[in-house]
Amino acid sequence: MTELLFRDDPYLRQSVATVTEVTAEGGIVLDRSLFYPTSGGQPGDAGHLSWDGGQIDIATTVKTDGIANLLLPAEPVALPSVGQEVTQKLNWDRRYRHMRMHTALHLLSVVIPLPVSGGAIAPDKSRLDFDMPEAPEDKQALEDDLNRLIACDMDVTAEWITDAALDAQPDLVKTMSVQPPRGTGQIRLIRIGVGAETADLQPCGGTHVANTSEIGTVRLGKIQKKGRQNRRVYLHLE
Image (cartoon, rainbow, N blue to C red; front, side):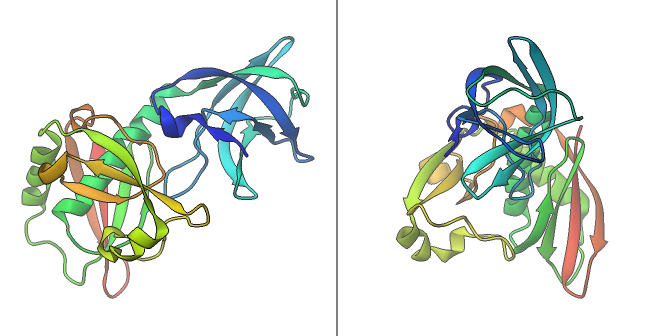
């Protein structure tokens, strides 16, 4: 199983690792990975690997067999061998924008307190889909509320609960189509705020900023109708 370095420290940009597998299709598995794999609406990380005698650009990262991160090279070039020590380096600007976006989307689900039916994160424009039969009456008011929350300088932290504890608190799960991954007996929660001042608490395996002040000002984009009861709300970083 790949050790997920990004889970313990999403700000870690460079680290040494060992190649444990090279697939027939040219994917690379490391024993410890900085690279977040595509899941939960967040794209897989890109970056760079280097080793004695070689280097390669990583286009994206996906999960393989549910337990390991598979790094996919940007082009077919010579790959490191199994057992080779490599230095992995993130495309940090892209990852950090994903972190800012992801935390902002959690807060968007606070100012629009409706079930979330889908979502996608990108560096410049992200979205959440809501079970929202009617469009909001005042989009500007929602944007103002969101930016006020962001400006509260709330800490963003991770904690863990058991599957049974989550089952006892089903309201923590805001997403309708994606359920938290199970199988290990524990589920990761992301908390925005502290104690009684908590603004949001929900299951999430993605990467986030440490404080909402890092998000900066955001802007709500188009709100599109997608089906009878679905509205798609776009979010932009300013």
